[in-house]
Length: 248
Image (cartoon, rainbow, N blue to C red; front, top):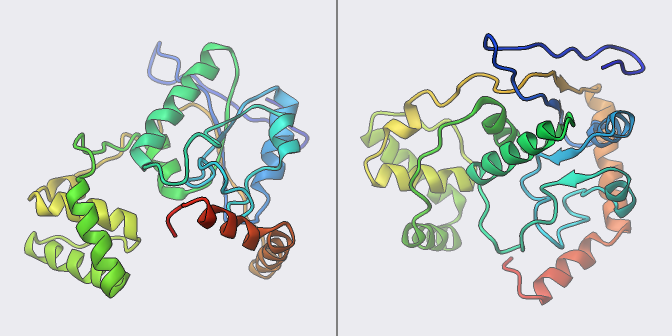
């Protein structure tokens, strides 16, 4: 595929087996992923698959920097506005849905563009993470939510580290939702799922393009984006969601 500046090459992998094709665009907030994604998607009549963990929620538009209505209309987008704000959604869900969309595009002769997004979600899809087959435990989640509400996220991390120490492992993350899952597994005594190799290697044929900018320029773009979000109704969006009964 020839772009304005380079050629994107695809190769056949796995002997006679042709891997599904995918272009992936990664980078930090406000680096310019959307602009490049839309330019390539228009040029190649492609489909954009969102790799963002929150753009899947209806009504969370301004705060998630969701593509504008004009951008959404310009090229087909997938995995945007597919859940209500209080619906449960996980990296495992994204992996399954993303893989389905990639297969559908390839069957139609379309090379999809995955635009990330949430790093763990994208990595889980690209590298085929092996997620535990057991789903979330509602009772454990409620108990952990109560712990966070009462004592804060620091207490959740302390509890997670205590369980990890009992199993002789070290937690490699601190974000709340991954801690929830890790604590569920450790309370079951399943330390293996947190330590065994989970990657299959890259599953798709195509480039993973990482975008970067000088830090000062990137921070300026982020600051200007926040100003634009506020001007476009960020606070009003939050008020509207809360008034509709969405949990804070």
